[in-house]
Image 1: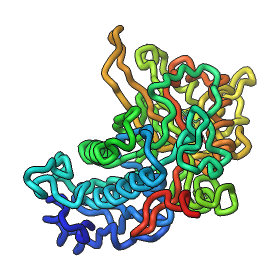
Image 2: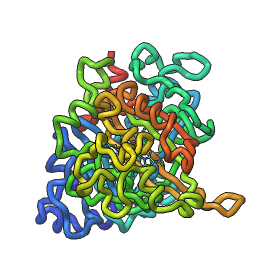
Image 3: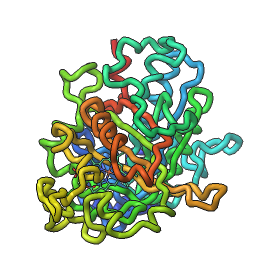
Length: 424
Ligand code: HEM
């Protein structure tokens, strides 16, 4: 765990012996492709995933309970300063994900007349499964005024362009786009917030926070070992997701391969984020039968309306009385299913959110949808085009934020996330 750090968070230090005995150790697997903890510690606060490896953690890592997602715009800095920021972010993220401090000094140490290097609110907390995942937006490569600020325009992957406008989109610029993103996920909300707060602080003078989103209650499982959670419509979400235990499918649909496009993206993925406002009040006044018809699954078990249990494959050919398909043509699962989309799949990793309420006393609630894929033009874009066109759910949801980021492969120790992008 955090033993290699000069000064780490108190709990990580005090429990070092316990976790070593339990065989829990991020360091044990560091450098391997799959970010997995070696064992589940008795105290979930102690769970730590390796930061370094072939792929960044936070993608096929079992989805944690909490999210703090942050998007930054890079200030007027040089290429060398941008690299310096990525180096600093990498070092801090590696430390924090193992339960260490953001800086070299603990929050209550370091020069007495200087501000502490770590803000301190996670001092008594363990790593709590923290993963920190970095992504690069299209405008990092070519700014909105067309300039190539960092000499990387020629290295922009073909797939990394602004997403098309989908039917019904009501996007707010303020919570869309951005040059850089950081997805911090943890099982303790304060650990996720602490990570983003300290990374923002490190960025000061080099990149500015454009927007950030808190999420609670994962809306997907990314491992077969996880129980399927529920979204704010009360339905199980994540049943038919890509799962880490299916490496062939993950290889095919999540990771960018060496020959796909730009060589520096090998081992990476593309992250799509969509802030989807859910009109929960009208939904809550909708009949159960209509709710199930909209989704195409039962509310309780999450089974397809064609029968079976949660993990039974839906039978889209099954007809009910009057020859109508039992799973409605415009139901969400039918429209999103790979069978309807030429085999397109993605790894969903979204979170519920409630940002208070609006002026009419309605909950400002929804789904902060996140998905990872090898090529958004073959996964998210065609599926969302179909959903935006005729999903029954559209009556109850509104997409208000949107972004696409290239997530490079994982960093090797001593290097930084995205280093291959800047290599000659
Ligand atoms: C508020 C918005 C949304 C809600 C409430 C929602 C809800 C659900 C639910 C309940 C399921 C069934 C359980 C499961 O297999 O996970 C599901 C499946 C799925 N959703 Fe969504 N979803 C939303 C938005 C989206 C978006 C934006 C996309 C991508 C464009 C998407 C893609 C999928 C896919 C690919 C499946 C699996 C379909 C299958 O293979 O059976 N969803 N969603």
